[in-house]
Image (cartoon, rainbow, N blue to C red; front, top):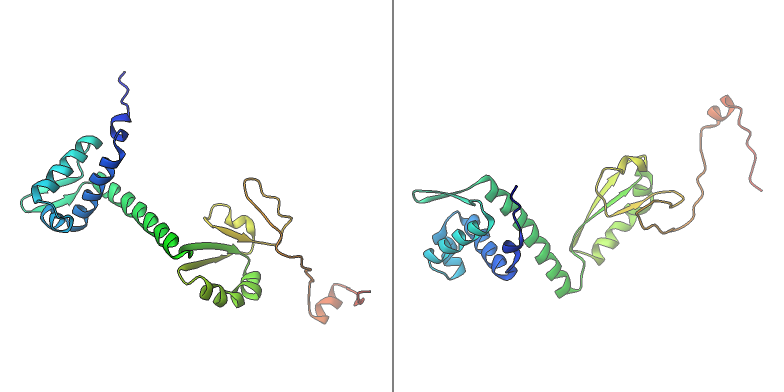
Length: 194
């Protein structure tokens, strides 16, 4: 049995990041020549960096054809991962520079709360945080969100959720309402509150 260590791959993280950046530019253009122009390198320099990265990773990133490059399946996966990581890094840098929140926030709540309380306040929130896109999901039952991703959930509850931070926003009273005919049918009495 042979165990492979991941240590050589991570031994020089700065060099690896530089090589991954070169790969992302070459993958964007599917051309070492155009990547070289963007990176102020020679075509041979880009080719050398890609070969070095492929050696470190121990798999090919490109299929090299005559005057044409294609990404391998592994190359496609690495590119998706890099694009997602770069988007996250650049979003965070913008946040730091501007001191503003940016990106997306997923809010889960009930349809009633969304329409009666949240939606009327959303325009003001968006004006305060223009770089933050609000994604609102509504479902009748909070258990329906069990497998859905969200950043914030707002529900009527006791607030006891393991592995979640919860805070009471406000207290409210829920009152059932029905038509007088339905109340008669169920033999409800109309007794005023004291």
